[in-house]
Image (cartoon, rainbow, N blue to C red):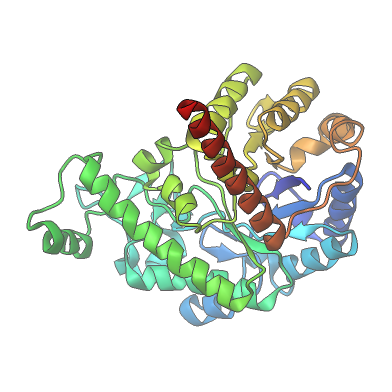
Length: 380
């Protein structure tokens, strides 16, 4: 069993623009040896499926270019025909827009805005944010996730570095300030990186994840909760994502830290670090890191991609997710051909929830056995 995944975007990609293109892409991925696809379903304040929740809240059902279509439904149908698992990707998470001052979401609901310490709309790297600590906002995003879980034949759902997340510069809205005062009898620190302030806000997001995880399992206990934060501890300090706690509390079934390094040596150093120091042995079955294959002017070479995957396996990591699909198709499908004739030559089963739990239990048992043996050696 391996996780052989790919992110499918609607930016710099034409796949979702027609049912025929979706079908061709799913067939191509299956032939190349992939077993799971992560299609985007939420970005820039729009869903990429007809949403009754969006219709009721904002007066529109879907990204306008997809009016009268259901790209997610078409993709699920095409993927299932060729044996691909489908895990919809809520790309924007708690972000509502990109360089649009909140876009349609905050035009309709300005009280949902996240605020920095100067009272400005929270923005980071061009992305503008809803207040992830607000109960209404949390309910809204949870409702979208559950809507997809209830209405589509999917294998899981995915959040990334924006769900559950909020840039650490946020949290200075009056409601969050008041909640902090009630606990600590003082205002939040002006320094957004204050350790107690970081952890208090991160705990709110972890509790949101806990509720979402439980609600998803009530819809379907076999659904996989997949998350793709950045590398710990950077993700905690910058986006309030306490991924270590998520793992320790069993709030994530698969985790794909974004090891987006642009040279092989750096990728290897990072994988070596996280597998030795950040991930307990029992967590390794849940780990399948994100590998960057295309962004801007960057393209990974075929040899570096193959070696990165080989290094994953050497470190006990049985999978990866590649960002993103269009990188496979460049240069006459060069990367896809390298995968299909190399590490993905033979089919691999995508693990179910039960498979993952068995693998985790095996690792836990092995870890306990190793500790007992080492303790006996110390006594001799």
